[in-house]
Length: 134
Image 1 (cartoon, one colour):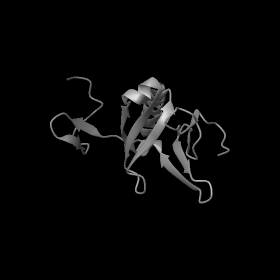
Image 2 (cartoon, helix red, strand yellow):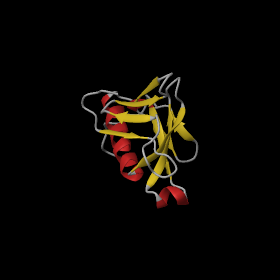
Image 3 (cartoon, helix red, strand yellow):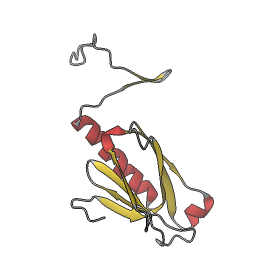
């Protein structure tokens, strides 16, 4: 995976925390890449503005070997829900990814109003969002 302007890259780690697997992850400011396989290689790409939610999980064993798994929900057609599995510095990586997702969503003008009671709603066109006189 030779790419320019990467802000993060890592490899899926095995049960000992060693990067002896064939799954590679890379992140630039607009896309997340996941490359798997050695003989039958596959590369998936998700535009960051399509990521809708991130969750970090760390089992007891992952905390011992200092890895974690980031679960991503996205609006991408081919990669709706996927995991970035057993990576080092998972909490820092999740925060970096979260910030880049927000930047990409603003840049691409992808907005959703979140309702605490009902989840995501469509943006109401009748509301004047620039009126500061509440």
